[in-house]
Image 1 (cartoon, rainbow, N blue to C red):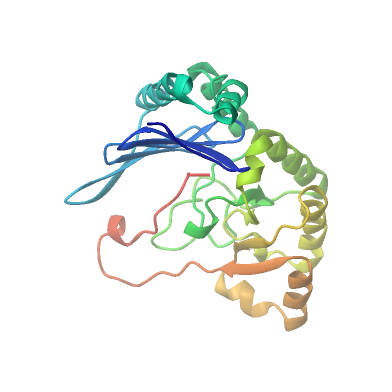
Image 2 (cartoon, one colour):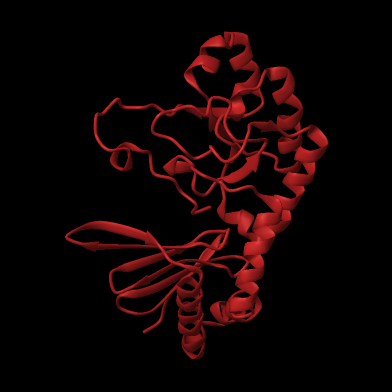
Length: 264
């Protein structure tokens, strides 16, 4: 028996017990669950596998493995079509089954044209619209963090940032329906002065109205901000900030390092 969950934001189908697929409204696969294994595809084309064998485990699939899993998932969706409701059948034909392995590879290239690598996001921001107002991190000297070692800190000028935002909107398409707030990246975008931030926030509000704003900030920059600066940012939609902290735990870095996420 085919189970369906068709929301305005996503499409979920389960053709049998122990197997389900979740797609965004562009028809891109987001999650494929198969007999205790969960495959998640990022907007950038990476496929991550999570499973439990005693303890929870995870690994990133290589390109060939990822394409194989994507092919299997879309084949499952195609085989479910004869049992689909009229509404699901329409979504399958218009959104989901138009994708091929080559199309998914082209999405990887489209992502790379719009974004620099997104090294880390807070777990509750995986489904935010990520806008890279800056690249890299102003501090970039934390002992247990190597997310931004490959790039200098860089601030986008308003014109460049606007092109970036338009590119993000084009990349996401109807997948934007699934995403909630705006995460202002990269590692320390909120360290910018309000004078430099405001034009960027105005562009974000114009292109993506009525969305709350979030972002990283380091402790030192946060302390330097006056209360009136924070009030001004709050009036522009800033709802929450995130501070990365080192524990000082005297264990190998591989255990103490924060986990990265590329599940955008």
